Every structure is written in structure tokens, then in C-alpha cells.
Amino acid sequence: MELASEQEELLVRLVEAERRTAGVPGERQYFFLTYPLGPPGVQLIHDGLPDDTPTVFRGDVDALVGAGLLALKRVTDRLEGVYVTTTGVKAYDNLMARKGQSHRRVQTVVREYIAGEEFRSRYPAAFEKWSKAEEILWRTDSANSSTTVGHLAREAMQEFAAALVDRFSPDDVEPDRAKTVARLRRVLQARHQRLGRTEQAFLDALIGYWGAVSDLVQRQEHGGQREGAELTWHDARRVVFQVAMVMFEVDSALGRTSV
Image 1 (cartoon, rainbow, N blue to C red):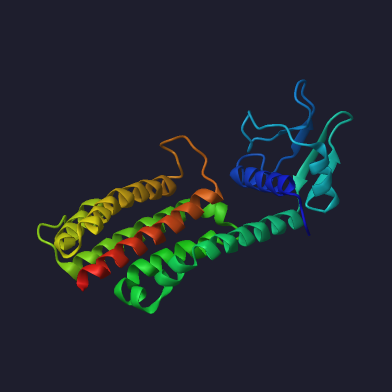
Image 2: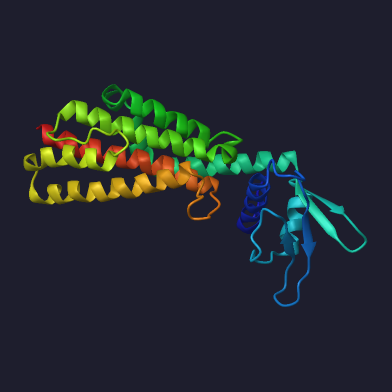
């Protein structure tokens, strides 16, 4: 089934709004259709959507209804509502998987490196944690497991840093496994002199990159509570990919220090 990009975006917005309110009192609810004064279009009202959600083209709503992805019901004489059907949820899952395939085409080198025999043999515990996070990402209920993705990603980074410490045995290393930035810094500093100036600068930059990814992971694990932000599937995808990317970059850079 082919949808226009605006219709795909609308379906994604509605499914993710429903998943944000899953389990709250009142359970599922309609997306009420209202017609505000001002810009043309229909306004969708739902607890899972922010108040400033822009209006949408009524034709896109009707197209999703016609495709069986939404169901339309007249709630009162003057008020219509829609909800996502089971077919709509499946279409959303397929859409996310297709987008994931597109991401993976771009990220093939990183994914194959992480899943390769050499990496897995060097960092078995880190790979296990990361692969579990990736598996959850593509599950149908991944929106309800976003904090688990963050937890596993954090553990993957801790296991990766621990394996590096065991492998290179730097002096004065931070003993706390949770302080991965400090532990990684000692490992990279210990290997500094084996690289040229440009690659030394790259190793230094990797420490900052690692720290930024670590912050993303902690945000994911805590469900964005500190920022008051609602996390989406795309936040989980970013965490899973960026953890893989930073491990890939660190391991490949350190591999060049062994020559």
C-alpha cells in the first residue's frame, strides 16, 4: 500500500501519540477532529499530541480511513473522531522497518563491523548488550521499552570500556565502571604516542563524542524526565546507532595503535 509522505507522517504521528498514552486512565481515546478558525485544515485533539500540533489536510485523514489504517466515527452530531486500526499499527511497524532498512543501508559498514567475529570476540559482553537493545528497537512494542533500550545501551558502553581497560591496562585508570568517559580517556591517552598528530587529535575528539553519546544514553534510560521531554522511537534509534558508531570508531582507531 502506497501513501503520500504527508500521509505516512500523519500515521506515524497518530500511532506514537497513542503509544504515549498507553496504560493511562481512560485507556484508548479518539483523535477528535475540529476545524479551528485561521489556517485551513483539521485539528486533531488527543492527550498524546501537544497543544501546538499543526492542522492537517482532511484529505490525508480520509485517505488513511479509506486504506483501513484509521477508523472514522461520529462521536456526537457535530463531532467526529478517528482511531488507529490494527491494520494501521501493522502499517506503522512496516514503515518503521522500511525506514530502518534505509538507515541500515547507510550504516551497513558499522553494523557489519559490530556484528563481525573480531569485534564480538574482543567485546562479547558489550556486543550482547548492544544487540539486545537493537532487537528491542525493531519490536512492535518498542515504544513501551524505550528506557530498556537506554539501560542496555549504557551497559554496552560500560562493558566496552571495561574490555578496553583489560586489553590495554592503562595506568591510574578510574575503577568505577560507570565512569566510562574517564576510563576511555586513560585508554586513549595511553595509546596516543603510537599515532600521528592528526589521528591523535581524532582520538581526543572521540572522548568528547563518547561523552555526548553517554549523555544521550542516560537521557534515554531515564525517559527524558530531566528535560521534561517525551521520547520517541527515533530517539531510541539514535541511541542504538550512535553507541554502535562510537564503539566502531574507538575500536578501529585503537586497532591502528597496535601496528
